[in-house]
Amino acid sequence: MRHGARTRRARTTAAVLAATGLFAAGCTGQGTPRVPADDGRGRLHTAEPSTSEPSRQADLPSPLAVKIDNVRAARPQTGLDSADIVYAEQVEGGLSRLMAVFATKLPKSVGPVRSARESDLELLRQFQKPTLAFSGAQGKLMPLINRAPLDARTPEKASGAYFRGTAKPAPHNLYVRPKRLLPATPGADALTTGFRYGPAPAGGTKDTSETVRFPAARFTFSWSASRERWLVSMDGAPDVTTDGKRLAPATVVVQYVKVRRSAFHDFLGNYTPYTQTVGSGTAKVLRDGRSFDVNWKRPKATDGTEFTTKDGSAVNFAKGQVWVVFAKVS
Image (cartoon, rainbow, N blue to C red):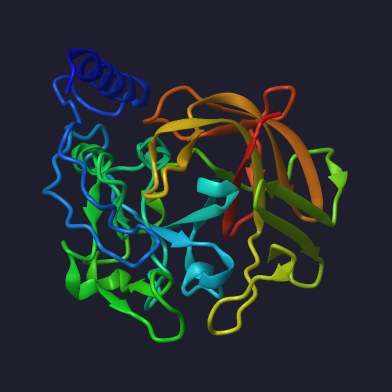
């Protein structure tokens, strides 16, 4: 390999580490490229032992985060209704993937489980060493995951917690048993997101339906006055769990963020979008059949996200499950 090519590769790796701001000095994140664990053909990746930096909140419990498949072939999903928070992000090809965070309830099983992305590392820094259940990642990303302050649990590291279902073909049939990853239910104290719950802010606009579009995916949230919840539809179809429960969060946040190209790509060469969740911007909060135009701020990765009205007052969410959809700022 020519010296120029080696230099460009070294600069690219250094830029990735500097941009994420997630690791201690001296971690290069370089390694021999390997076949992605979850490359669209159901193959699994062997994760390396994880190391982490000292925690700033060592006395807090750690939640469980699960990467969940969200293409049509993966639905209906399992256990998603038990999550405290569901994050929706854009991935390759304009499709969407979910990250479900569990703290107050651990369902029997969750899935289908899929691979992690670079954006997940920044998003998860708000929690105290969370356990991340995922099926693997792009080969060059795995060293970064293994050095992040989280407990990475792939099927190879926790084989007894995962199983393959029979209702869907691979790779859309991998499931995890949360109670085999965590010794006990973490509890609400693990949700260090900055979210506040209580009475709705003043004002707002009556709103019974909102749609968020990704290049190749669509989320619709329809207000049900009888259930006092937002009913979720995906790509025009009602979204239910495998046991027939309609997904219905109490609060929906459409958070407008910068989405840029990641340094990593899938096995087809499609670069992964990087969803930037540190910074500030605008958002739309849906609760109680109304929408509220608000501001959001997350100064650094270890902070939760604050949502405020135009006059700076904190915005309360309705008690119950929260969905956060990361939409690209125009």
